[in-house]
Amino acid sequence: MLKNLFALMVISLLTMSSLHAAGQGTPFLITGKMPHYTGIIKANWEDTRLNLTQEQKTKLVEVRKNTLNVVFAVKKKLAPLEQEVALKILSGSTPKELSTLVNKIAKYKIEATTAHLQCIYDTQEILSKEQLDLLGEL
Image (tube, rainbow, N blue to C red; front, side, top):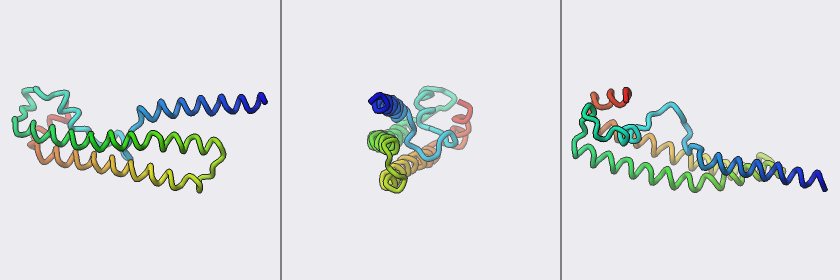
């Protein structure tokens, strides 16, 4: 009985930790290696050195909106799947039994990463070389 209670406590703590981590985790396959241009631009929107035109601002807002729509939708789908994998492996599921869930998680992470790549590409198409170089300094 005491052993079962202890196991339940451990699983509960791990579940809470995984829920906390899922809210803060990244939905991307590649992390820390690619710029988040629209976030940097948003923080420096009125910077005179960046000197964004109204046309650029309009296009950049659209790129950011499209990217964030995909990323937030993916994050909502990922959190419960990652929690399910964590719970099932702790309750004795085999890696083979979890492969369908893991593949689904990978598919969503590919979707978010592809949106990030598209965001970077689109931003590069909108900004001048000088503006892109400046983003690396901001």
